[in-house]
Image (tube, rainbow, N blue to C red; front, side, top):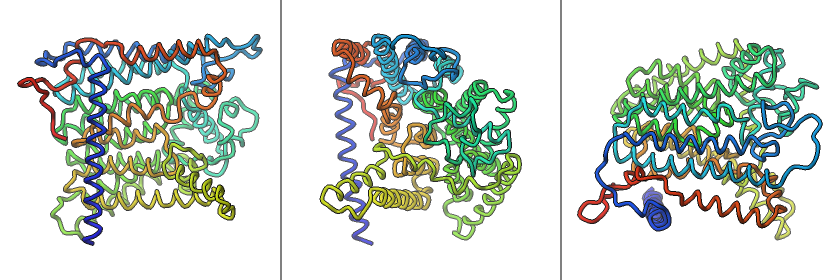
Length: 541
């Protein structure tokens, strides 16, 4: 045990050194090569400047909307009838314009870079200066989310799968045993990624019931169902805003900062509103439940976290943390385990009722590893497995398949995530249980079989109200790099760019470089600590 403890301390010390050096290097680059170096931070002058980042973020979102609205934009599904505008006609004529294609790329990536810069500076300001008006931040959220509400589904085709599963639910075809292909020739099938045509749904019964209800309300219209699912996730982001503010207050934190880090997070706006992923509904219900928990309403907490579990299974981790921390840390172990029975009763009741409403039972449990069908280098466990299998084949060991090495690496990743989560649960009284839950959710994403940007929202929203020290830096880093996982536009974008006019590519790179160094205004000076005695007054890590 002593050796294990010494090894753990050594790993921790190495991590601190590397993380500190990396963070210092990023700050140095910002100071030297961005307009931030112009300013010497002065006394904070209040929140009257908020209209500037609000307007700049809105412009960024409008750029993304404009770029994704071109007929041949690589950031959306280019199929007839899948949105109200920007789709090819049923009888296309001529060849796509290379110039329009590059303009689409520049607008979307320029908007993404501008949005990241504006949000990053705003996040640093609310960290240093507490008390931002929640009312103004809600208006900012409405302004930023507006273009995403009218944009076509971006960066993913998952919402079309949801719509097909809603149609299946409405017609009593069991999505836990059948894939969308069972619908036959229908407008619901064509937009679904062929990879999922015969794949059963891994989502909880509550989501399927809501999904089917939306399909029935839209009178089985495929496009209207997609719009309904988009609006459902808009409501989910509003729920995240309410929940994270409630959670922050319960933890004695600034609700304005938590709101900026969660509801205004580019990852949330782009993947939950823009992509209409149901992870937003799960996360919204989860964070509201956690808000009730820290405000000492444990039964309401269990109810909302159980509702989140009935949308997607990862929320069940929150049930364990709520139950374990129901009683004070100094309570006897036997008493601390008793709330797990209460948690089991509440989640059982919620799952039974939602399963009855959806009408399909618990078949979703065996489908939980369905996303593992995808092999992506973005997932560390899968990447290790793929690299290991290819390396074995390269040295002549063909008896071990790549599938075997991937399966082994994924198993190790899940076991590691589970072990670390149990340790965090045991130590949650010392570390802060909400913070420990946020780290656990991110561990299950990063060590899971597939890493999708929208999965990161689970833990980032929880950490927004509970982070400590350097976790703030990692939260910002994941939020601004997450939307670029898998490269928006995918392999087709890379292939098309390789064959594009080099002069157009050079011009595009120059424009995007300009967006990176474009001055945002004097308000950004307050994102740096004020100078005291000629030196920056830095907050301890």
